[in-house]
Length: 79
Image 1 (spheres, rainbow, N blue to C red):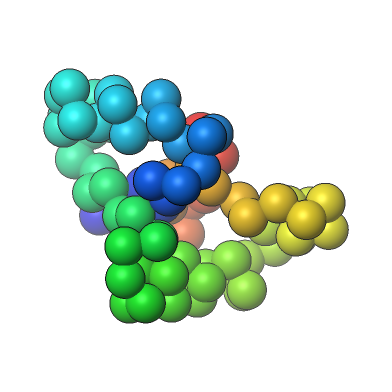
Image 2: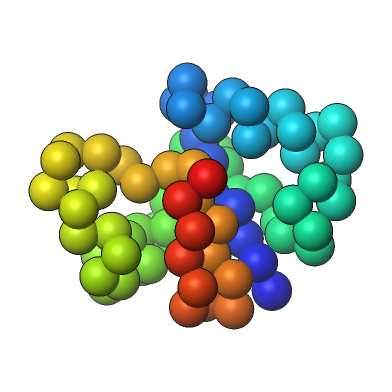
C-alpha cells in the first residue's frame, strides 16, 4: 500500500492534491492523507518522519517533509 502525505494548508502540496482530485489513479493505487485533517493522520505521518533517515535533511532544514509518498511503509519518495 502507498500513502501520499500532504496538507491542505501547504502550498507545496497544491499540485499533488489537484492531480489526485482530478484522477485518483494519477499516483497509482496510493491513498491521499491530509495530515492537517485529523490528529490520527498527523500521528501516522510523524511515525514515519520521526523514525526514517530519509527525513533527516528535511528536519535539519526546518521543513515538514511533505508532499511525500511512502510505499509499503518503507520506500520514501518526496514529490
